[in-house]
Amino acid sequence: MGDSHVFTTVKPLQKRLHKELENSTIGFFPTMGALHHGHIELVKQAKKENDVVVVSIFVNPTQFNNPDDLEKYPRMLDKDLELLDEVGDVIVFAPDVKTVYPDNYENLKIDLGKLGETMEGEFRPGHFDGVMNVVKRFFDIVKPTRAYFGMKDFQQVAVIKHLVKVTNDPVEIVVCDIVREESGLASSSRNVRLTEEQKEEALIIIETLRFLKSIVDQYPPQKAWKKAKQFFRKGTLELEYLEIIHPLTLKRLEKWTPGAHACIVAYAGEVRLLDNIQLIPFEEK
Image 1 (cartoon, rainbow, N blue to C red):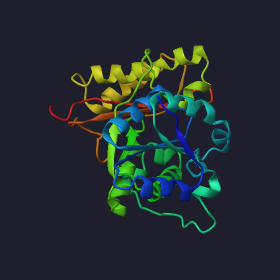
Image 2 (image 1 turned 120 degrees about the vertical axis):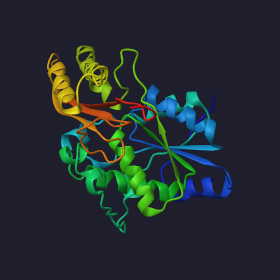
Image 3 (image 1 turned 180 degrees about the vertical axis):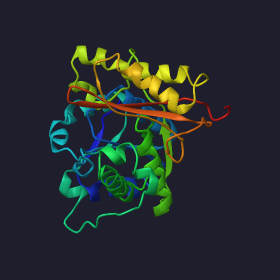
Image 4 (image 1 turned 45 degrees about the vertical axis):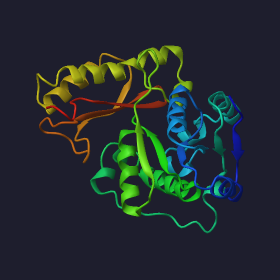
């Protein structure tokens, strides 16, 4: 148990990290706040693997292509800090927009190729440009040894790995398993916007993914995809996309391959929910 140390500007944070804590390994976990037990599990993992842990809390406006979604995104810094205090000694970086993107900030442009053309890239144009800019900005400020990302944002993880490769950033990317509610619903900051009824209805997401996984031995990908979409329609949510993809290239699969993955996004009312599941292990077909 211990108090979090909160920084809102760059220089005091860097003085703390790179002078007072020099030669320490730094674990970094970027978040947009509205923390939940899924986030806390990642913080705990980072604490086990590093001398120091930095958690950023910043709702990044450049990764929202829907202004209404940005406005409604939950912001609850005091509750976030209470949660982090339960974990122990954590450094929190909670800057404002001007701190992250000062007047002299030069926008980072990286070609994602096929990685940015499917799924989130198709339905949220400009989203990954915003993600890469804020993550690279934080990497430059914090200079972490390791950075932690949740597998729930499967495509985002691929994008961050590409970013690190292109920029030759010396940070190790650590990918953490999806944390779920007892019901099976993937833990998400957006879940606080769901009613109890919507949380129940949203279970069709994980049920569809599990159904899809159960039929991979019976059908080729395209047929399995159609069966899964039919299964999803038993529920009440609005499907944005369901894709069966290669785990590295994210290309739509025509035949099964080790590591094959399914990604889904659906709306419960106005709340956009995403999830994914590995369909075939890497070690066997």
